[in-house]
Structure formats: C-alpha cells, structure tokens
Image (cartoon, rainbow, N blue to C red; front, top):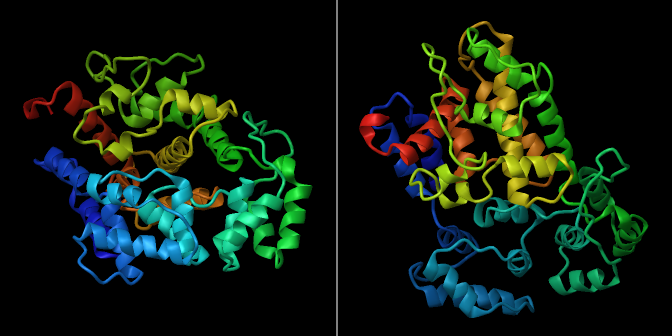
Length: 403
C-alpha cells in the first residue's frame, strides 16, 4: 500500500458521523483524490522516469519514446492534455497500448487499470480484449496481438442477455485462456465459441439479478429490514418499486417516529441524480454512472449498461446485502460490527468484482472509498446512510445549522 492509499485509508478510520466537523471532513476527502495525471506521474516514476516530475514536455517525451520503441502510435498533444487539463483519460485503446508499450505483466496490467485508469480490467467476453489478455500473458507484442485479431472471427454486439440461456461466462473463458499454450489453440477456441462473445457483462448481470432477488423479493432483505426498523409503521404488502428500495438502501426512506412522516423528500423522476449534481461532497467520478433506478431496471432486464454502472451497482447491492443479513440475524435496533466483519464484507465484494473481471475495491477510487470507509465504522450501514443523508442535506439545506 503506497503513501497515497495509506492516507485515504487512514482518513476512513478518522471520520465519524458523530464528529462536529463531519461535513468538513467529507469535503476534505472529496478534494484529496488525485487526478489522472498524478496517478500517471507515479506510474512512470515506478517505470524509470527520473527527470523533473513537473516538466510536462519531459514526461510526454518519456511516454512517447516508450510507445515508439514498441512500434505504437500516440499523439503527443493527447498526452500533453492529460497533464495540463488534469482530466480523466477515457480512451481504452490508449490504456491497452500503455500496457504493451511498458511491457506490463498481466498482474501489472490489472493494477494499471485499477489504480491509474480506474476502469475495468481486460474484458475477456470481448474477442479483441481476450486476445490482448492472451498476448500480455505470453509476453507478445501489440503488433502480434493485431495479427491475431485479424485472424479471429468478427464479434457482433449481442445486446439483450437471456440469463436463462446457455451462456459461456467470463470466468470460464479466462480459465481457457490461461490454459492455452499456442495462438492456434486460442484462435480455434474463439472460432468454435464465437457466438458466445459480445455479451455485455453477462456474469455481472447474473450476480446483480441474484442480489436483487434476495433484496427485493417477497419477504426479502429490504422488506424485513424496514419492518424491523419501523415496527410501529404499517407497510403495504404490495410489491415495492426499485426506487422505493433504493431510497431505503441510501437511508432516505426514514420516518418521523412521532408523526410517521417521511424525513427526506427527493424531488425529480425517482432518481438521486439531482442530489449529486453540483454537490461538493460528491467527487465527479462518484457522480458519473452512480447507481440509479434506470440503470438497475436495465440490468435486471438484460439490457446494455456501461461498465461503470454495472460495477457500481454490484458494489452497492453486495454491500447492502452483507450488512442487512447481519442486522436481521440479530435482535438489536442497529447492527454493531464485530471483529473481522469489515474484512469479510470487503472480501465478499471483491470476490464478485474479480469474478466479473472488474478491479477490486481501491481507496483511491472515490466511489470505492465510500464503501471502504463505511465498512470499517462501528455501525457500517449507518455510516453509509449518514454519508448519503449528508449529501442530501448539503444539496437541499446547505446551511450547517440544519444538519
């Protein structure tokens, strides 16, 4: 764990919803996440860059030289804009070229996507990226990878996923890729199974569907939790909407113990997006693709959603499932975490992420930090919900006196 990661991890242990300066502590954390170019600085230093780290031209030349040596093209102006504009790079093709240019191992490639690019690892349900996975594993060059891609079958986007059909899941594909010792084996496998490629997040969608059934089903976690928390309130036996349960998970479906009125009124089309927009407590990378009703409904219907929506939704639901189950096993009004609960929660989320080719939780990812922070609190579910309520109050009642 590097100094940057240790700093953010320590911040999570220092902050409590009971602190008088709780809001300011959260604001400080939101401002402390480094920009993409700062992550890239650390990466190139680890790879041998020794000139002035403040010299943009020198850094661009160093990276460009690495690309040139590997026979790869990249525009200097693009590299320069990363360092000057401090924006998050979104071009996945350049990220993959980085891995070849710097001759990264498979483990280093996965770490590069996790800590520098903050994107998913190579998606082996995509024929092109499955070939990149194989080539990086076998220390082949980018040009060799392109030659294999030209020989491989063409991939068509599958769109809707029928999770009840016979799908070759990502974990199985990776096991096969790890087994191959020749490009002939690889190409034969891709040709024989070409119809199984092109699905978007099949494994992740399967897991999200399983999590959602456990949470939202009749007498599911959400129903049992809310009835336990508000025993004096009468709830309908009708099936609950995605938005209603999401509000509960976020801690925005609370009621006045005296009058029974809702404490948090969220305006808009059944989404938290208005609360996140232009909110200093929310880092731009948290706001981007934040889990919402529309995204989950699309996922459980088998329709396309971006990698970020899928990953963030899976983290949210897995976190809630873990702590809600522990809460319901006890008899107290709140669940106080026991030793090792936090590690178990994080491990359970990471297992899902790794099994679906997504990077593990990382303190340097602003979205992940929220769940890592909440998990180590004495009352993890409350910590997460207090965070979301603070986000709500910072938007609708920014005056400190009302918090």
